[in-house]
Structures are given as C-alpha cells and as structure tokens.
Image (tube, rainbow, N blue to C red; front, side, top):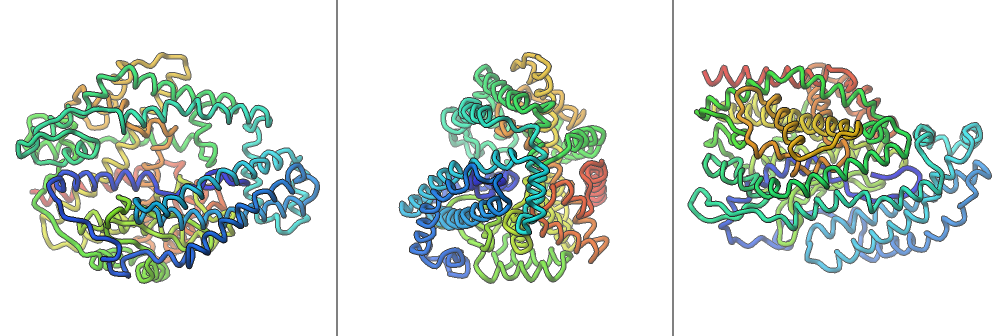
Length: 635
C-alpha cells in the first residue's frame, strides 16, 4: 500500500488471507513430502508459457538500471518544493506531479526486482537489486516526508481555493478530503518526530514475538502414524491436524502448545506491551480508543467492527450444528479442538493439470460476464502467471497487486491438488481487481484498501465452489465439497471473528486499567472458544493458550477484515448469480473504483452495506443451507 502524498514503503501486496488459506494447503503437503527426494526442476526445464514474462515490466536489466539512476538522481529535486507548497496552487501541483512520477517509477522498479528475486531466491544479482530498491525507497520516503505536514499547514480555505483555480489539483480532491479528515489527529512536526522516534521501541513486542515464534521456540518430538520420531514445527502441526490418526493429532496438538504454555509469562509481557503501544499512539493522536485509531486510516466506522462481533454472537447455531455432525460422523465420545480440521471424507481425492484448472476457473466465473472473462483469458495467455515450483523459487502463492502502467502478476506453485485450483481462482481475483483498478483510475487512486482487498478473491472462490457442487455427479465428491464450504466458513468467518472479539475485549480491559495475566487471558479465550463451538466441544487447556501463539494479535485490529471481506464476497456472489447484468456492472465498478472513495462506500456502491447485519446474516443463512444439504445426502 502507498502512503498518500509521499512515498512511505513499497510493499508487495501478498495478502494475509492468501497466506492464511494457502498455509492450510501447505500444511497438508508438508508431512506427505517428508520422505520424497525428487529433485525440483530448474527454470529452463519449464515450458515458456508457464513462466512470467518480465519483459512487460522491463525489457532488460539495463532498462531497470536506467530508471533506478533516474530515481536516485531525482531525490534531490524534492528540495526544490520544500517549504514552498503554500506559495501557489501551481507549486503544489508541480510537487504532487513530481512525487507521483517518482513513485510510479519506484513501484515499477520494485515490481521487477521483487518478482525476479522470488523466481530464484539463491540468485545473488536478483537479491542485490531487491536490496538496492528497498534502500532507495527509504531515501525517497525521507526526502518526500515534508509533503503531508506542509499540505496540512495550508489553511483549508486556501487549499480549496488552490483546487478551484488549478484544474490539475482536482484529481487530488479526495486525497485532500482524506488528509483533512485526519488533521485533528495529526500533531505538530516536533510531536510527529517524537512519535516516529518511538516506533522502533513500540515495535519491540511484535518483532520479539516473531523472533521467538519463528526462530527460538523449541518444539518436542512425537511419533508419527508410522512410528517414526518427528520433531513438531509450525507446518507439521497444521498438517497433523488433518491426519486421520487421532492419537497422532492429539499428541502433536499437545506438544505444539507445550512451549507456549511454558513461556506464558514472557508471552504475556509481549502481548501486553503490544497493546500498550497501540493505546499510547491512540491517546497521543487524540482518538477515543485504539480501535478507533486502527480503523481511522481507512475511515471505517467502529460500528462495523461491533456489528460483526454482535451479529456473529447472536448466530452461533450453524457452527454448533457443524460440531454435532462432525462428532457423530467421526464416531467420537468427545469432540476436541484437534478434531475440527480432519476431513470426514478422506477417500475423495482428485488431481488437476494446470490447463484443467484454468478451464474450471473460467467456467466457474462465467456469471461475472464476458468482459471479466476476456481479461482473465488475457492473463492466462500472456504469461501473467508463473505456474510450477522450481528450484529456488519462493513457496506459496500471491498476486503482485497494482503497479501503475504494468499488469499484475500471479505466483503459484502448482502441484495438481484441488486446493491449487482454488488458489488460482483466489489469486486471479486479486489480479483482476488490480487490473481493473489500474486501467480505470489515475495514479493517486490506483490502489485499494486492505478492507476490500479480499473481496474479489474470496468471491471467486465462492463461485468456484458453487460451480463444483452444482456440477458434480458423485455423492461423496459433493459431500467433500460441502465440507470444504463449511471449513471455509469456520476458519475465515467464525474463527477470525472470534479472534476479533478476543482482541476487542482484551484491549478494552487494558484501557480500563485491568491487569492482563496469562490465567485471565486463557479463561477469556477458553470461554469464547466454548461459546463459538457450543456444547459438543470439549475445550482442552492447550486451546485456551491460543492467545500466546497467534501473530495476528500483534497486527492491531486487523483480523476482522477477513470476516467482513468473506461476508461481502458471499453477498456479491449471490447477487451476481441472482440478478445478472445489473449486479455484474456494480461488481465491475467496484473493481474499477480503487481508492477513489472510502472502502465502506465502495462496497455500498456494489450493493453491500457492512454497517448492517445483512451480509453477516447471509453467511449464517448459507451455512445452514449447506448443512441441510449435507444432512440430506448423509441420510
């Protein structure tokens, strides 16, 4: 995402939901691949049509170097505008145009460097270009940092007079509105500098948790399904939760939580430190709460957050039904948290070539209309997708996001699983969102908020799942697909709302001066988990320590957007299938809107009001419908 009026950080938009969903798929692949020694192919062994054409970004490294030098030599020119933005409308316009020009080239440089790096992480030259562009981005950010405070220092009447007399400034009107909206929460230059200096200090909790969880933590070993000693890891934990061997699931589950429970005092200190940092910034910027401070950058009303938590809490019944069905079909006396991911239909397995996956996605997305499909075919036929795993290539999947003047790219690591087809649909949703935005918005609005970033992607998944369910002739395959639907709702909707509710409650308690202890957090989380899953669930002590292991709790009221995006996408998918062209037109306008309006208004224009309970209730209603269909088939 870009910071308005001045380059802040160039970050490839690899969305957290993509990582979250993909991790479920990678978990399943992790253990099954342990014994394999097959060599991965090299880049030259892959047919050209399955590899990115980076020539669409730069024809050669020499062209990249030319733009790099242009940006590097242009940094000093920011000084020509410093302390002069209030002098005239022309001076303000020239500064913004120059800043945009620099940022456009910088984004393009970053795209080429990051994509090249991810194709071969062992390539020193590619890594070198990536490091150089990140350093250059920091220099540009520092040089352009005066723009925002200088615009805020211009009296509002004078600023709007500038806009009126200088036609070129009118394109920035929404950005000016947004900037002025935050004026009450923007401090003096000296105070802003102090807050900036505090950043490395307040970030310690997050960075330390990351180091502990990813580097220092030591998990025990357990015996796998074959009796072999296996050391638990994050990925192996996830894979084990899908295992049909219940004793193995339980042993990995208990072993995985052991270090988090042992280091509970260290982890509660980090947890509390993170919240205190958020409260510090909220108070310093004169917000009523850290929730308001977190939602303010995207102008999301706090009522949206509260509406989600309240409406979900009033509609737990479908999740309770699902727990009861799982317990019955797994033939368990007690349902435990380590039973929630294992499939009820392990015999259903199908493989897909990439060509078959493409055709499935095109058929499933037919309800979105020919305009959408034609651009999707363009992406497939012109090497916008890097398909197969190769030696040194980055794992997982992502879409590169919006880069002005260049089409977006998608990275895959195709293995032929059904999950790969869903990943393709998901990432192409991001891809088309970025494509339509870039083609229809001027540069200042050629991006979109994280609040709406997962809507297009999860909508594609919803349409694909509906298509597969409607067209399968196999009863067992249909049951497996219905189960996948229920798992999506459980993980992306109910689970993320539970996290959001927990985050809200703990933050509110600390703001009221309550001390948060490991025992208190475990008690709160355990009761929430029981409330969500209902009376069929036996909540293990280990599960109550989930607060100690989830990195999202350090992201400052982030996770609720998984659930709201999911609800919005389900509503839009239903509208498109029910209403046809009028709903398609609204959806395409949503994709084209970028950040030209606030995200809550962009969604309203598409026909979804996230301030109301309706989209949330739509997910609940659909889950009940899927459960009805599953129970009917099972009878």
